[in-house]
Image 1 (tube, rainbow, N blue to C red):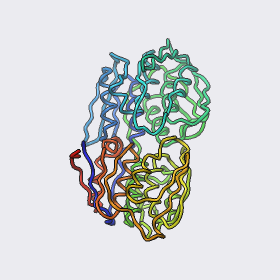
Image 2: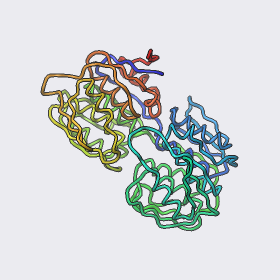
Image 3: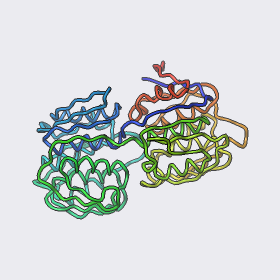
Image 4: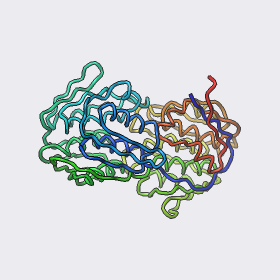
Length: 425
């Protein structure tokens, strides 16, 4: 098992490029199940979750190739020999449930293990199943698996009681081949939803309204071949912008539009950091005095829950008190205990974390050995380690590798002192 060792206290500067978005690439790769023709997907990041997705597809009999150098994936689901997503693969990645909609839509059946992934809350799949049932599928849960069957899906009007990115994606994919029109109300509006719809439309789907709260899909009989370039990863980009900010550095992230960042961009400016457009990307210059910022997480275009932990690392350095309210997942403050080991002053009550910044006290974060508990918590601890004085060791970085492609190499290129090594424990 690997760990990262960071010598903190160095300003970083330079240019880093945002990779393709993991959270867009995963549903798009699963969406290729809807066509029996070859689909070429560009800008697919070289991540553990991508590897798991390709293994799931290959296990089903799908032809796949992936070049990690060019980040080009070629998929052809001419047929599926086994419409089963087994536990041993699905347990590592929650997004695996996204095979459900495409399999039922095209082949009339699916057997998908109840998903795993990061331990940041229950994240039930009930909305996914509700939508499929409204479209005519029969659902049974037995022995840890979701069994879904239908003769053919039919268009329906589906209104989600709460916004769900995954359920919106699964419903879009199921509706593409359904008979008639499907209307999704209270749909998720994340950029990854828009990117999925863009890909599907490029291969013959008829989807309107992606990126808004109401999406309409007119079912088609068949999809054709096509190619698509995955949108840039707004979470990765935001993480590197925080890296520049937390070290009082000067970092430009290329290939990212501010529109993709939602409320995160305005909150970063509110902290005193200078965030400006720079060519095809964004440039951040860290402030000598970080100002306190309070925010709550909410669906896009609100503040992304996937950036909450990273921003909290920055707020530990602030001059004043910040309050962070987590409204998406009930167990997403697990990084707090590890930040306390680095000297942060944070109190958690329910879904609120109160961060007493160290700026006014003259204290600072100090290096220690910390344990990553999930993907974004891993990034938070790396960022805190960049700012801490002394040496910080972040253990269990297999979580980090699920969503960031060799982060230590990018940070080293920006001037950070960070290395990957085997964990002797």
